[in-house]
Amino acid sequence: MKLLPDLSDLPALQLLDVSHNVLDTFPTSFASSGCKLQTLLLNSNNITEIPREVERFGDQLKAINLSANQLVDLPLSLAKLPKLKTLDLTENKYVNFYLLLSYW
Image (cartoon, rainbow, N blue to C red):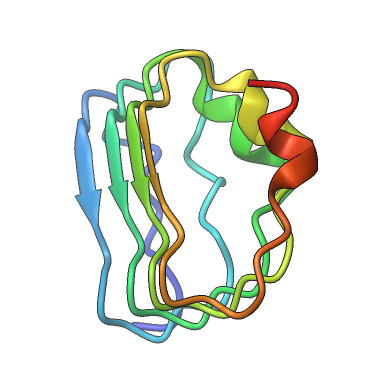
């Protein structure tokens, strides 16, 4: 799968597993302040960046797995996810996360 279908009709969705696909963009189109998503599994794709819009997932998101992608940098907007406890970035290209850690 290269593109996600429209998920905006699933506001109660708590876990989204789209690992082991060929996604090259981080999905945020269905994120909103009413989003109930707690776990987002995006490992083993071709994602190159996390958009600033990731903060639209609000305060419900607890875990993101982005291992085995093509990430280089992380946006500071990840720090605006107050309940995020797990962020897996293993097996990426060089990930520059030091600036982000200073905000957590």
